[in-house]
Each structure stands twice: as structure tokens, then as C-alpha cells.
Length: 255
Image (tube, rainbow, N blue to C red; front, side):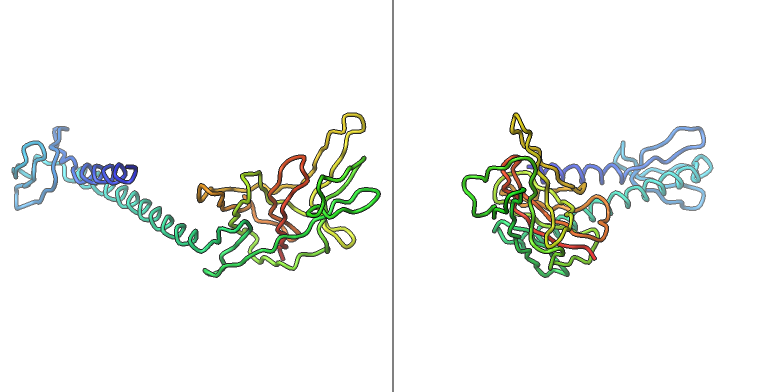
């Protein structure tokens, strides 16, 4: 139905744009489809009367008519280009979606080739010990402060484009983000956790990057990209639930 309405709208705009005003020197005008100058006469096709008519050229303000029709033609061509560009972008997007697996994860398309990012194994580190989060059930008891970390100070996944586009297929309909990681000795910090001493309320502190998001399907496929170029450093795409320490992490670095 939307496509039909869009086609009818474009068709209506085209028909309207094809009509223009043939201005007369007395300030009035004739609504015409086209016109031509033949000697001392101007012949025009009247929209109102659906027939060809003619008028002395001395009565017609050709300069004003040509200026307005030229401006309308340029506007119509610009509008048509926008429509064509939107159609081309929609076709390209559909082709991209077909290349992305439906398995949960993070993907990129580089020159049309699929790149699959491997999920990192994260650990929760407090003052006493480290716990591998993926292997803990129920969640470990935390007192005071803790960090969620992934191993290594640098990611093996190098992204050369500092404005990268990622395709994120969610495993659940949960929040997601691009975050900047903090390298420390042997690890990268994904987030810091503080536990309130009395209420035991958990506060999670991340360093998110402002991003644009676009939902590409109803089953959790999204395109995400940073609003501003990323500085050199360590980053990750994460999917998480607040307070659950269950972040899925796909790390990368910008060089």
C-alpha cells in the first residue's frame, strides 16, 4: 500500500510539474502544458481548455515565463535525483542485508566481503579473584568495586576505517553500544562496577561512543556506526542487560 501511495504521489507531482504559467505583460497568466514562438505569435497548449491556442508575442512576458520554468525544471530535476538516490540506497541496503548471517554477532562488509568478529571472553575481577562470566551461574558475589575485563592490551581485530559501520544481529532484544576500552596490564577494561555498601545497589560505568543506529529487520538486525570519527584506540561493540553483568563483547581497535 505504501509503495502504491508513493507511486501515485510521484505521478501526481510529475503531472503538476509538467504544467506551468505562461505570463502575460498585464500580470495575468495562462496555465499551459507547453508553448512555442512562431513569428509574432505564441502558440500554447491550454491546460484549462485542453486545446492549442495562440496569442500575439507582444502580450507575453517571455523573460518571466522562461525564468520561472527554468527554476521549476531545476527543482524537479533535483527532486528526481533525490528519489533516484533513495531508491539506489534502498537497493544497496537490501543487498547488504542478504549478506549478513542470522546468527547473533557482529559483522562488517569490506568491499562486499563479509567480515565476522569473534566474541571475546570476559571476566569479572574484584579485589579477591577473577571469575569467567560466561561460566558463572548464578552471578558471583561482588563487594566494593570490580571490573569487567577482556584479555590482552590490544585487540587482534584491526579496523582501518575510523568511521566504521557494523551490522549487529542481536541474540535478544537488549541494549547495545560501542564503548571505548581502557587498556591496563594484560587486559582491557570494558566497564567498572561499584557496589553500594548498604543497599548493595550496582553501578556500572562504561565509556560509550555516541552512535547512529538503524534497524534493518524485525528479528534484531541493526546497523550501527559512530557519530564522529573514532580516535586511535581500543573499542568494542557490546550487547548487555543492566545489572546482569552479561555483556557480549566484540572487540576491535582503530589504528
